[in-house]
Image 1 (cartoon, rainbow, N blue to C red):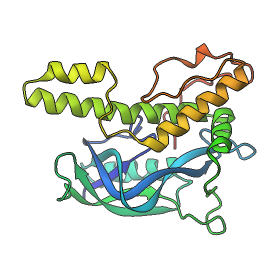
Image 2 (tube, rainbow, N blue to C red):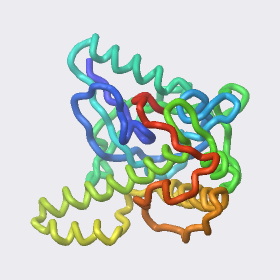
Image 3 (cartoon, rainbow, N blue to C red):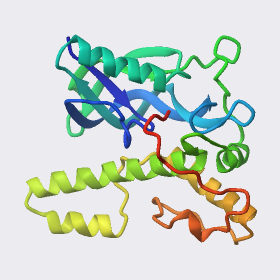
Length: 249
């Protein structure tokens, strides 16, 4: 038995389990939304964090990473047990087609597992639902839990999506023998289409909130992730927590 799982949140940059193969690509007709509560990793029951789940939307594309686990029942059982503990706020396992860049019509893989959540507050206690961008940004800017700050989760996701674009540029242009041009695009933060506009918009709104809380003028909106560390803001009540725990949601 072999299984594949698609990561679109922290699994992209921090899988945390033993896998045999990783492929960058996307799923169709789903988009990320920050509508799911996290009360044990990046938040608490009193002050839940907002983490991403997938929402069905025709024509949408969600980039991420597919991981393959093979090597026998024990290894596969251990990996799935880890994922189920980590993704405990997600109440569904959905099977999706997974596509690789450059091959948008024919799926590379079928039957790929993805952890999703029922978008219903009654049947799913972890579903927060949508909220105004400013309210979501303030919640993300201030929530924290055993695995760290909620805002770090968002910023790391933003960076991971940008890194996927950089990886794609390097891979494609090195094959074509034009790596120098690829480095030019990366250096000037040219967008590649792999980024998630919703994630970028939300991250920039969180930066505005951090500027207000820290007493620092609001930053201008960025078109790509910033590598400026959070120490540039006055911490006050927002002291970052250590990122020592591998498990995350």
